[in-house]
Image (cartoon, rainbow, N blue to C red; front, side, top):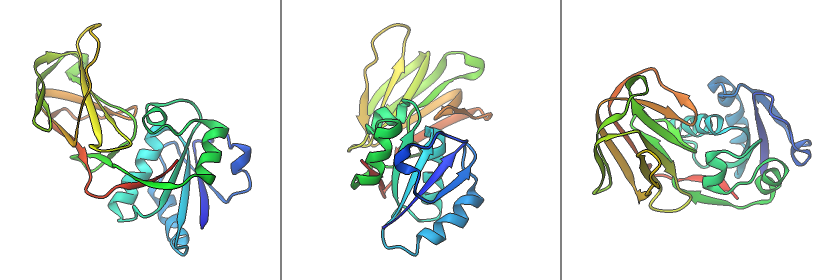
Length: 219
């Protein structure tokens, strides 16, 4: 097995990873750096890439693996601090996550993507234009999540099937999460924030769903 560390945005390197080959990249990894690294790792029958960074960085890596048909690469995740992704996938953080990324076993894990082809790792939130309420209708599989206006729609991946869960925010009311394979939204206008990155484009429709092929998460 060949194991390589992808260090995003100068994240602190745990001692357990210090002796491994390492590539520096931006908080959102450059695809050029991945294109140089992945063919080298492909020489090994069991390549493992440990992503040291945040949810958005890991999402960018998996999006690239998805688009280049390289989801056979085992992925370890070492976030510096707790994130939506670290909680969803129970990876831990820092040194504990690093040891797990080295010694753990890769398991097939549902890969959640949206209709633009981008992978979701921790949390997607959709609100109305300019922070207004989100107006429209959303379904999780065949279950209607809401119709009308809500403060926000939240979507998160799950480490097991059916793959994702979604909820709506209505004031201080306790959230009810609905699990399924896909969530579909139709709206008069929505703004999507995916793993902390907000898009500029106003959407009328948005879909997040389980990809037909899983990713290999080391835990």
